[in-house]
View 1 (tube, protein in one colour):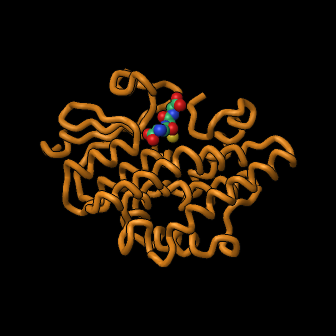
View 2 (cartoon, protein in one colour; view 1 turned 180 degrees about the vertical axis):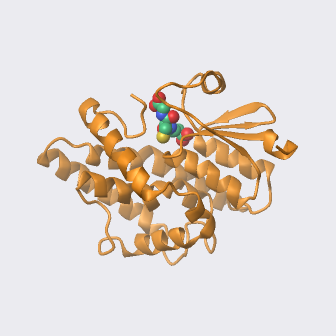
Length: 232
Ligand SMILES: N[C@@H](CCC(=O)N[C@@H](CS)C(=O)NCC(=O)O)C(=O)O
């Protein structure tokens, strides 16, 4: 194994959209890395040691120093490896990109999970309304652009991977709809472009295997009213 590969290690889980963000960024920048698959039902000593606060993947280890939380890891990668920037160069645009990434993680995703995990029709209708409103806000950011990052995939596109491939797969498993081409034509145009990209496509979890996984996680999450990405 080359020195370069040893210097960058990613602890992840094949099915996780958060791991996928980091794999995608590393591949977009052509950074060689070693990938370590974690078992979240039996977390390794290394993972707990590297991320004692959250005990979660992804963890990036660079020159033996751990960096955690996917949004922070993406920014770190962008600062260390300057080629093929992910964040905009302009400070205002960069602040905007950070805002939308936080919007996706802090507002949109919790709302989407609330909808998928809703227990009855009343709750489902209320949570759907909110999730659709937030998806519309995100869609409006695409405006006439190809990607959130402009002409090429950038930081917000990477963070929005959950919208590009996860929501669609989850809704297929759960059997209740949120996203469709008619309601979100601009977002769908973006999803198609996202899938068209050879690097993105190359690191998406295989659909058949992923669907089985999502189904199992969903059943557990429903009973425990947990999150789809939680280990318990
Ligand atoms: N905010 C974290 C979320 C990462 C996350 O949710 N990771 C999940 C897997 S998809 C995890 O490690 N879960 C383990 C657990 O909850 O015990 C990030 O952006 O990195």
